[in-house]
Amino acid sequence: MHPLTDDTLALLTRGYAWAPELRRRHGGGPAVPTRLMGRPALLLHGPAAVDFFYDERHVLRHGALPGPVLDTLFGRGAVHTLDGEPHRVRKQLFTSRLMTPDGVEALGRLAREHCLRALDLGPRDHGAVLFEEMAVGLAAAACAWSGLPSADGAAVRRLAEDCVAMVDGFATPGPRHWKARRARSRQEAALARIIADVRGNTALSSPGHHPTVLEAVARHRDADGTLLDPRTAAVELLNILRPTVAITWFTAFAAHALHRFPAVREELRADDDGTHARAFAHEVRRCYPFVPFVGGLAARDLTFEAQEVPEGTLVLLDVPGHHRDPDLWPEPHRFDPRRFLGREPGAGELIAQGGGNARTGHRCPGEDITVHLLATLTATLAELGLDLPEQDVRIPVRRIPTRPRSGMVVQFPSGAPAADRSPLPQ
Image (tube, rainbow, N blue to C red; front, top):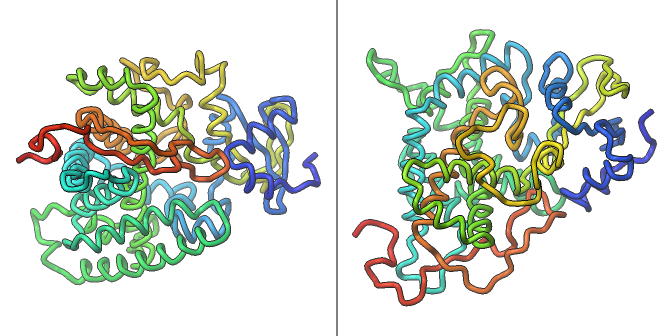
């Protein structure tokens, strides 16, 4: 039986602590009934829960995401809202056309270049807020990689700020939420105009022309054979730009980890083949919270671990709890990148960006990009050897999405030679 008490207010006030506290109150089982936004819900935990949740015969995404999340984070009509064949065809736009190894490598090079430019601290002895400047660098890299028309610095910074606002306001009512809505509306309208211009340029269809990311999105046809309407195409283009900019959260977490565990810096500086940087990136994604859970709707009447799951029940998968489960992770509260050295995490092991199959299921198709960019930028931060002046680096667990309070203010070590103070080649 689902309880009568609605837990929405508790979720809003407790943040990432909500799911662990709910599970503790119910004895820590793998399936805990509750209510959210007036509807019955079931919080799932554990490896079997991951398999259950990412089986489309059990859990559907269509209709699961509330309107406020669609109007801020994902956008109306986004791939995240589809199931079955429509989802598979739309997702091929991202997996087979865009997220190729060469494409990921190219984006990594652009991200390093543009983030270094954004983080050029030479004339600013007071330092810079890493979170903000990395967002600008990642936005510039995403625009260049996608083939968007060249924009001036002010336009790129506005895109970065809007993408950050969309992520920052998706899980909270009030000013942050309304700022996120305005940001999404502004960027969707601008990108829809660009999509229309691309479709009107017949030269881009000439034989031998290799389409850019922008052109691939503009010319994508859905399962029914039709082009996406310009607004939906803009939504999907934004679902490439926004998650790339959102990696700024992980770069701030990476800087926080480098600050707290300075011994790791030397391992990264001596990392010739990138294995330590990639392991570090995985451990950052495991240890630092981003989403409190992922959700879907029960596709039919089901049973999970002797718990009845009526059709239409809101099914939630506990993400931070999964990453701190002592049955899955030795010393789960210890930050130890070595647990990933020489191996990649299994599909149901590290679920920071979903579980299951990245190509056919609902695992984030941009996970490879996130890991590669985070590893690249982490290695860059270790190489620069930036100092952190006195600041508040606490990470509040009640704020979703959370981040270090200061945004990680960084500066070059005092006394460094002028030639060494700029991260860009002289």
